[in-house]
Length: 125
Image (cartoon, rainbow, N blue to C red; front, side, top):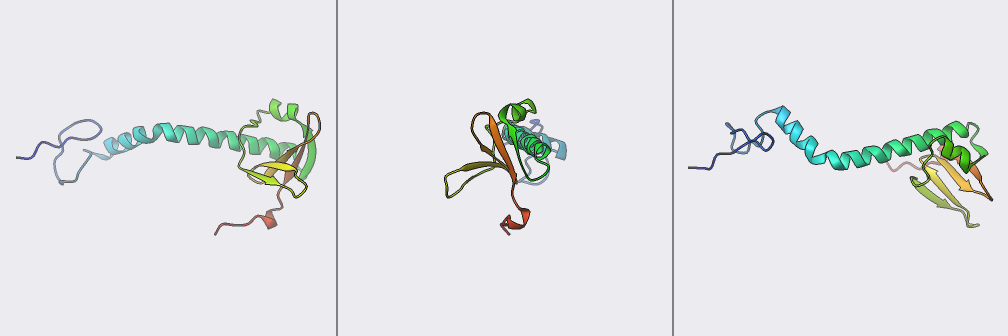
């Protein structure tokens, strides 16, 4: 006699197919949500920070190139710890990007805001 199989989520006995792991869709969804919740929370939180950073850069840079200050960025909730890419010029200037919006730290508190020319953005397809 085979040992009784039980639902991985609620522990109720399973009936039916030999490879069945859950008693219903609710248990299957609950089990998978619990299994992935920590990693999903981390990714969701980082994505929220990146989206907020992009919104701040977009708001402060309507023309595609302008100057602002670190203080103004921080006051709007910009988090300098989160970027999507880095670009270094031949002259050695380091631009930090949040999607298509970038910034370059200048002297003192000043920051140059730029936007990538979308016609030059290379698709990975």
